[in-house]
Amino acid sequence: MFSVFPTARLRPSPFYQSAVAEGLVAASIYNRMIMPTSYGDPEGEYWRLINGVSQWDVGVERQVQLKGPDAGKLAQILSPRDLSECKVGQGKYVPLCNHRGTIINDPILLKLADDLYWLSIADSDIWFWAGAIAAERGLNVEVSEPDVSPMALQGPKAEDVVAHVVGDWVRGLKYFWFKETEIEGIAVAVQRSGWSKQGGFEIYLKDGSKGTQLWNIFKEAGKPWGIGPGAPATPERTESGLVSVGGDTDDMTNPFEVRLGKYVDLDVPDDVVGIRALRRIKAEGVKRHQLGLVLEGDTPAPLGFQREDIMSNGQRIGMMTNCVWSFRMKANIGYALVGAGAKVGETVQVMRAKGPVTARLVELPFL
Ligand code: THG
Image (cartoon, rainbow, N blue to C red):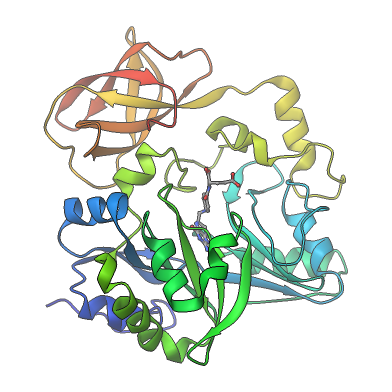
C-alpha cells in the first residue's frame, strides 16, 4: 500500500482519512493537496453519480478569504464578472483573469457578509495574487486561507440525503446560494453547487478536526439512498461541458475561447484586472474556440493527461485538451481548442500516441 507523508507541500484534506478508509486507490495534486480521484471502480462511481448519490472529498477546493471594509472592492477587482448585485448568502461562478485576459482560475465566489467573501478556488495560488493586488492598490482588506474544506454530495439523490441531515429548507436553496449552519455541533456552510451537472450540494466544513465525523454523518445518512464514495468524474464533467481551468486551457486562453464569455461583463470598472485586455480581445474577435470531439472507435481511451494535435486537411488547427470514454454515449469524447475557422460537423484527425484517429467536431455540451 502506497502512503503519503503530509508536509506543508502536500497537505491532506480533513476527509483524507475517510477517503483512505473508503478504499481510495488514486489521487492527484491540487492546490498542493491530495485530491482523491478513484476508489477503483470508475464505471460504478460514474453510474452512482448519474443515478444516485456520490460523496466526494473536495477539500482541495480551498478558500481565499477576503475580510475587511474593502473586501467587496477587492472581489470586483479580481473578477471581470459584475458583482454589484451579489447578495449576502449568494454564490457566483467568477472567472479570474490576468492582465492579458488569460483565465488563471475559475472560483465560486461566496458572499458571507458585506465585508467577508470566500473565493472557492480551482488549482492555482490565488492567495498570493489577491494579497499582492490588495496591498499594491492600498485596500483595507485581509487575504487569508481559512480552515474551510468542502465535501460534495452529488447526484439526483443528493438533495434527499442533505435534507435528511440538515432539514427540508435546503430544498429551497437556489443554485450557488448557501446558508451557514451547524450539523451535530459542527460549523458548516451548505451550498447548492458542485462540479457535476447531476445536481447536488457542497458542505463547507469550518473546522478541519471534524472531517471524519462529518464524513461519517453523511455516509450513515445516505445509506437508504445507496451513497458511496466518488470523485469529480471526468466522463460526467466532459459530457456536461464543464471546463477544467489549467486542463482545458493553456497560458493564452481567454474566457471567450472556452465558453465562459457569459461570465465576463465588459462594463465593469477600469480597475478590474484584465478588463482592458478582455475588451480588446472581444473587439478584435476571438482566434480560437472550444468544441466537442467525438472520436471513432469503441476502445476506451487511456486515462491521463492528453494534449494532442488536431489536424484538418493536413494542417494543424489546434489541440485536444481532454479525452475520456463516455459511458452514456459509448464513444471517446473530448474537448478541442481550435481555430475560430473550425466548424461543427467538420471531420478532423487527432494525432494520438498510437496514431491518427478520425473525429467529428460537435457542439458542447455533449449531453
Ligand atoms: N465547488 C467549489 N469550489 C470550486 C469548484 C466546485 N472551485 C473551483 C472548481 N470547482 C472549478 N470551478 C467551477 C465551479 C462550478 C462550475 C464550474 C466550474 C459550475 N458551472 C455551471 C456551468 O458551467 O454550467 C454553472 C455556472 C453558472 O451558470 O453560474 O457549476 O465545484 N466549492
